[in-house]
Length: 499
Image (cartoon, rainbow, N blue to C red; front, top):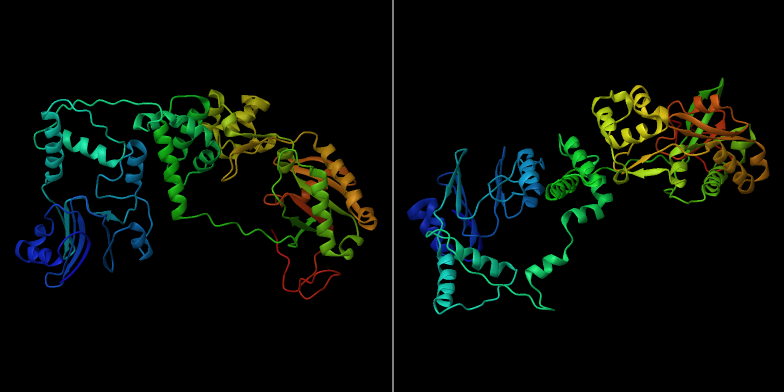
């Protein structure tokens, strides 16, 4: 027989009690402890917690039963980290999470205080032990001694000790008792009430953390949680009735789920990655550029010119001396720089937007009520119902995003400004072969400048090369094949691929 103990208890005494009384003998005395006992003779594993002993968790797997003091140890041992959807839903609705044997993990169970779990021959037996009221009797005896001599004011702190003493005094075999409690607060005196009064209401806290909240609940990982999460956000940001505690618990669950399956960072293509395309009867090579994040108020033309000049410097003179080349610019960063980005907490979806979002076809692109509301504001409910949101230049929040992006203003002027900035940033021979610039958005080509035809720009963007990159340099001809060299960095180890 093997016995592992965590807490205050005599191992020999427990072993003797088990030998004489069985599993029920493992919980006795007033000291809290938890134990794991393996009995090879009976082929049994016994888990027990005496009183409010240390936590104890177990998981039944194909290879046997695993037990540990923390769920993390069981997960590290190979137990699947699958959420228990029923327990998670119960926690969101009520806040209860530690009152049953079930945990947030579907394959992990806990041993409750004062409980013995015996697993033998594939059969699990839970034996709750009758609660002992020694601590309660002690607390009541102290209070009775004080109250019996008259009314004596006792200041209880808001920590565990004071709360536990009062709770123990009000419960027990005799049932609930009436206990007169007096409290007072003085300037500079820290009390539970004073501490609580300094905290803002939970709803106000949620509004302050709206960015993180929206980022988690707009794209929830919990199955079936998208609509209730969106409804909660709409009510919170719109001033409607919402249970703030449930919203916060939903947010915490989403944060927890992200620790179980963290999102893998997307592998972003290198800046020299080339993708061939055929447009206007000619062959082209598109070179997408990775950039820093654009922000409102940035000097967009100068930043675009810098990235393009760096790209050409890396490719070498041969890349742009052959023929015309062009610059493609995504509409989203242009809109961001212009401040045409509306976070969801600034949008109030109306009845028409909610109806369109609920009943519109998936091809309409009205994936959320906030995008639907922006489209309704731009073109009206009738046109919003018959045309995709992308046709109107509106894009909803991306996964992990929190804003609806509107089409940029004066995109043709922005393209002209980029060409003007390139005139200063590029060598003369590079600028001499520059054709033009196009701003391309969800609705297609938004604006062009220079010697670039809008139809050619549309063909070059048919497969959305700007989906993950804000800028693309388009060169005439095919890229270098494997083994060929250009006047610049060699790329013999890379082959051209289609994006």
